[in-house]
Image 1: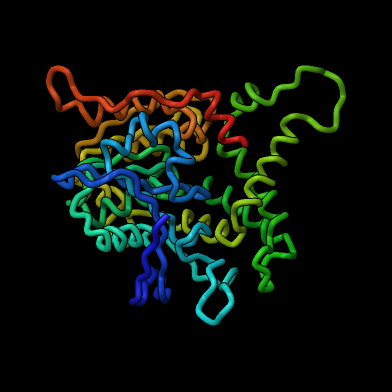
Image 2 (image 1 turned 90 degrees about the vertical axis):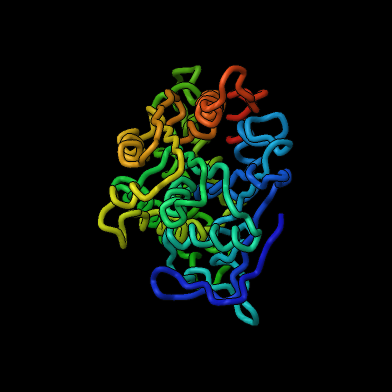
Length: 360
């Protein structure tokens, strides 16, 4: 992982600023001689800049986005806890701000991508890709820098965060804030609340059918430790080991702020500004970002294709259904070629293996 330091104040949408902004990022592969092989990834809420780790079905040697062909860049989001400045970042001669960290918006997160691009002297981006909160960042960036991108790929995301999504986020934050260890200058605070918050979140990330497939009981005996119960606890404890409750609150609030129409005539007007060839992918069982939101994007972005995939895994289908996604990407990115089109889709991780990786 690499990082850069921005020495000038980083001004936020709310008028506040961050001093000595640090931006952490991963790169894979190399720029080609024409400098036209850049793939830029915007990650989701609790992911990080190591896209080979969390999106291994699409990114890696021999995968669809292969570093032997592409120069892949994935920054860690502003406000996260994996290297880029966030609530847990120690300040010079001061304690971390924790719950006093300034509130962020998706526009702020997208602005960090642009700063890093300038620092890396990247002149054009072949494809910008993001899902969920990552898709929200990709939308904002492609609206504010429309001439920068050749292709835009959006999965399971929206133009404005819905009342339903905000309600889910607020329920998670209430769980964290109910933990008395949160705040009070306690850098490890909110752990129990974060466990509960993650359990709430999973209900929006997965589907009824997904729980039926993986958490059904083989016995009808009365129990007090059902598979679904232990699964929720396990997932909560897993996130608490690797993520900060303060970043969770900060980034979930940033998602709530998402509205590409803010400062524009309307949401539709903002989407009309996008110039990149665009692909929008919806997931049929996604309750958090339903396909109606994806269709709205596709109707209002010029030169846009829309596809949806069926998945029993709900919103998390964008992590699981990588063979289906890769086929759509293959058709989208190379459909201008005649005859034997070049393809980079060699293989992908099996769904059962990927689910085991997600649930470890």
